[in-house]
Image (cartoon, rainbow, N blue to C red; front, side, top):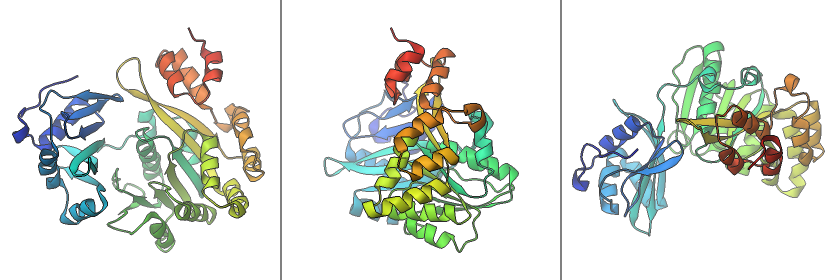
Length: 365
């Protein structure tokens, strides 16, 4: 997996050359950290490149060339900055610059595919094509950083773009996938450049005649409240949270609010929630990674449990009548992948939120 890049001497390292080689390796991320050689992430694992170790000054010299004076000022004042950039003949990347040990710049880049995948390309469950047909509601795609949430969301929006004449506003920090208008009309907005905050963008989105709104990250109470209101008032809203299961997602949203507000939020959720897709990526036995997706679709029974604060019963409800509902638990998704010999038992158990249940399904030596 390691390979000497075109210019092995540190003083001649060029960020564009590094990013070109990352694309060539089929990696997902590039890390530049002081006192280490550049490292890339392939199939979820970090791989050091056969290059000289970097220092903060070398990283700064390479990386400052990619950002604007405004972004440099933001970095120096806030000690970190997020951005997205497209490099001709190389690709599109999400970047984050941050400081280590006080004064040394470090950088992380993630490759954003320029070709937006379809749901069929991802092998997504058939129910995904059904939930995006809703006129209103909140669809959440959740999971840890690097779990493929942005890719899944882009595929969902791509499916709408192919089939529906809708106005879609995306609010992201930064904008990652850029959709070409096919049947749908896209308005992409960068937080910090095109709008001051997620909450501000959502407030004014109501005056911009959207059919669908994508919120790159539901970070705070104000944004969550605005998303729920938008979903309740006739819009289809997509959002992300850093949670690992449907149950944890509901708890996270409710716990964001004060005790006296939680009843109202549970009532709003019970009405406006359409679906929660919680996913993680696992390395395949062969090359590449596969998405493990837990799917909860809101129905009368699910809504009642949310409204009555019986969230602990959601998992059991998700296991009922799945042929009709399209729901699946993470355990069922992992069991299927193990039995199809796509992933190992060890890897499945490593990410499982219900390891004892999974052991009973797949056995464990």
